[in-house]
Image 1 (cartoon, rainbow, N blue to C red):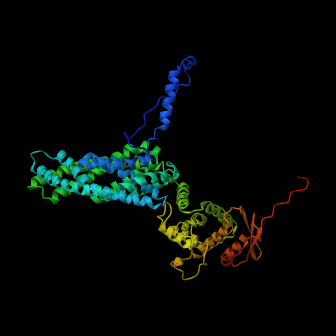
Image 2: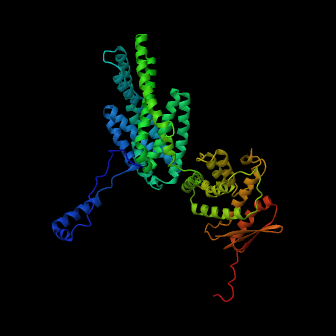
Image 3: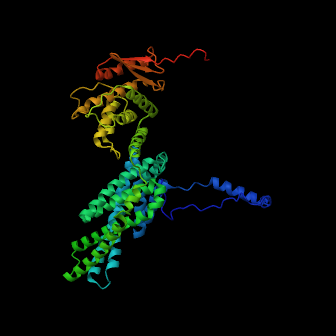
Length: 526
């Protein structure tokens, strides 16, 4: 899952056979050499494969816990936080697509330990800065180092307690199960480029805000936004990470040092480290100089036509790719919850066939992208089965409403999908229902989509994919639907008869369902 940082468990490069070697050289290989080669191959087959990706970093957390617990030195604490951050960032990315609660639980456990070690890490960083900015005979330097030494002792005690409370057995269980789930989602795809574009969009807005406000809070928020973008690239887009990793790390380090300097100045003010105004002015001048240098360095790389923002954006989805990727993300999310997702995919096809054949009177009040809304609702309509069988259509509505809209969608559009999916079965929609409260002119269009989905679902009520093709013909006074593989004598006919009622109510016309007859073979042809 993603690339591993340089120097971390890289596999040794093995020599490749030279297939163009002279035949005499190959023929001269001794029996001893062949035996040795066979033994090497056999040992390699028995050796466990080296862990990579999420499995590697989850195991690294346990190893770094042991190292950090010895003395809580600066390097072990930093390495443990890096390992935790890598695991949590993978969970953060996959939670968007895989709703398994274990991701959230692992992320929460890692966050708690990460935060408990954060104060100690801040002390270590400030000690380094005091050593860089101050002089050994400076009273401000001595005061700050004494204060930080006291804080370090207290922080080590809290860090030791946090490590004791960290459930390593549970973490080890996750280190087996979660990498398997992660392996089900292929990295480097349009889905992760779409997710990276979400993070890019958020970070780019924070970039503009920081340049406008120039406040400490704004630059700190920008650092976090850029960090979240970097983590998605780092873990899920190996090709882009190979090209961008150096710039992303350099920029994040620059903004991180700006934050460190802000924290150091606030700490010096808090502990009243300055014996006189001159020393205060001197230290403030040094900190401002270092801070300004790093912000200027950031601006050089990130402002103007040659900005790295534009370089990154060029390799991320545009136009219709954004909409397609958003729908694919919803589809993947549903596949983890729906126990019979093949049925939902088939219902989606049937629903679009009905939609494309029905007469639609478009109006300005209709929601945009009705076809996409219908398709999404069909793909998601059975996610409620992950909760319970009875009333699962209501559970479906709740799950979709709680889902964060992917980039290119909004909360309103997700609500429309939830409403359409909600009425694929169960009681018919009626005035006063909580689900429909607050809807405006788009209400009628959404109910029409729900009617289409309800009927499409009935055509696969047996979940065998027997009905492959639907055609809609507008007749005088009624709608005719012909279905390939349909028979009025089987159980499905009862489900279809009940499901067509909502469509009849919407169109105020009878709906007649007939089997699709094979076309007669012309005379003279066998």
